Image (cartoon, rainbow, N blue to C red; front, side, top):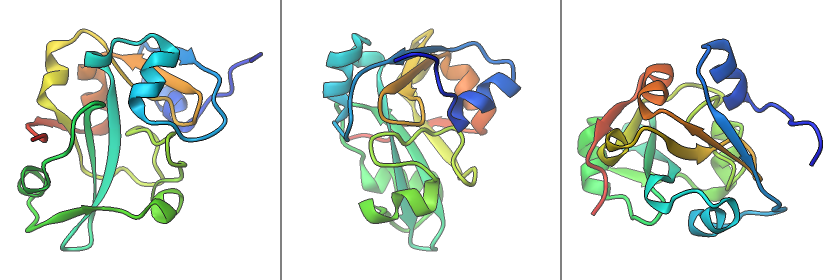
Length: 158
């Protein structure tokens, strides 16, 4: 693939002097997280997907959950302090986050939204998240992710 093109997510980590690894993989279009794991060789239990939701109040929230799990909307709403939350429409992802579907990272969105990371991430030295574009995965310490995003841990899945 040649020289690595830095994404906003990577620039933020660099600026905050946070150590991370980049795993690149060949992919031209959106694939789900389980297929990404198959391409990268990252451990599935340590791999997390980024979901962006809108609360009843109109605010946006970022939820980082294990790739093979479903978000519990009631738990997510309670965690965010909302009556309810729903996924934003696919067509809104770029306008809201600056990222494309399948390349949405909890780091480096157009705006830093309140972010919540599934509590299982705390049990790992390293987790794998989107690198900010399709074809890039970032491996980093979950504590560093929380520090740079201002996130907190929560139970977010069914």
